[in-house]
Image (tube, rainbow, N blue to C red; front, side):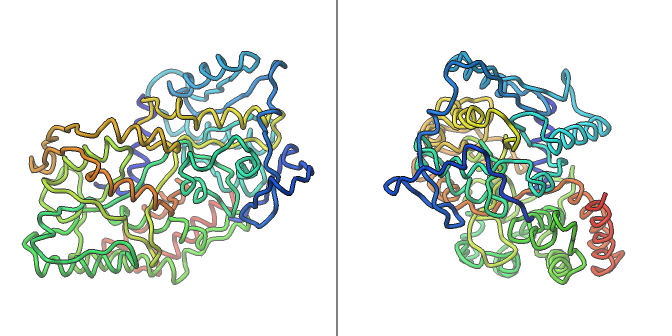
Length: 471
C-alpha cells in the first residue's frame, strides 16, 4: 500500500504540486488479408482494417501462460488474474513482481527496477504484458525501438470491442504518434476548483471553453484582485504550473525527440514558458504554496480529481460553494488535462498476443472496472456511471479543510454534470519522464528565485537533458 500511495503522490505532484517518433509494431495477427468490404473500418492513418471476431483466435483448450511484469503486486492485479483464470481455466496469469514485501522502494531499488525492466523490454524476451505506472521508466524510448504492439490495431479490428462502451477520447488521446502503445485502464483529470461565492461577488465572467490559457488566467486573476476582496487568487508552486505546461502533449513533443535524442529546452518556446510562469508571481497574480503554511481563502485551488467520490470530497473540502474549471493550457487549445493509470503495454515479441489482448479487454469489462480497489475513473463508461449513481442523494461530511471553511455537499444529477462534461472533454494527456521533470524543477528554481536568467537556466536544462538522452 505504501508503494501505491507513493505513486499516487508522484502523480498528484505532477498536476499541481499544491495544492516521439515511433514505429508501428504490427503483430502477426494484425496482418490478416481477409477481404470483407461490408465489415471494414479505418484507423487514424486512413488504412482499411478488417473487423473480425478476434475472440475466436483465443485459445480455448491449449494450456497457455500470460506473463505480466509489474513493479509491485497490488491487490487489484492479483484479483484480476484469479478472476480471469476462473473464466479461462486453460490460461495461467503469471505476475512477475520486482518489489518484494511491503514498504517503499529505495532510490537504488528503483534504479534496479528501471534497469531490469528496460533490459526485458528492449531484449524482446521479457513479459507478454508490462504495467508501466512509474514515470522513471523511459517509455518513449521503448516505443521508439518498436518494443510494443500498437493496440489500436486490435481495437479497430475486434468486433467484440464496442467503442461506445468506453471513453474513447481517453484512449485516442493516449496515443503516441498515432499508435496506442500504452493502454490506460483508469485515469484522472486536472482541474481548478473555484470559490464560486467569492467569484460571484466580483462580477468577473470566466469562460474556460475557448482560449483558456495561463495568459488568460493571469488576465482574469488581475480582474479578480481589482474587483474582489481576497488577496490571494491561488496558491501553487511554480513547478505546479510549469510541469503540466511542459509535459502536456501539445508542448512536450516539441521539446523532446527521444528517437533522434534531441531536446529544445534552449528554444524560445521553453524560455517563454519560464517567463510566463514567473510573471504571474511577479505580478502577484498567484502566490507560492509552501508546505505547512496556514490555509487562506483563495479564488482557485489547483487539484486533480481521481473519481466521482473524490470530486465530491474535494468540493466539500475547499470551499462552501464550489465549481470547477478546466486546467489552463499552454496554447488556445480547449479541453481537459488527464493522465492514465494502470497502463498496459504488449510485448511485440509475445507469443500469446491474442490471449493477452483478450485479458486487456477483460480488464476493461464492467465487472472489473467497478471493483473498489482502484479509486480512479474507469475507462468503462457504465462502470463510471455506476459510481456517479451511487453518489446521488448522498452526502459528504464537512472535511474541515481550508481552515474549516469547507462545506457539506448534497449530490444531485445537476451537481455532477460539470464533472461528467469535463470527462467527456478530456483531450490533453499529461505524461512525463521523471528524470527530465527533476532536471527542470531543480534548475528552474534558480530562475524563479531571481538568481539566474531564463536563458541561463534554459541552457543548463538543455545540456543536462541532452546528456540524459544520450546516456
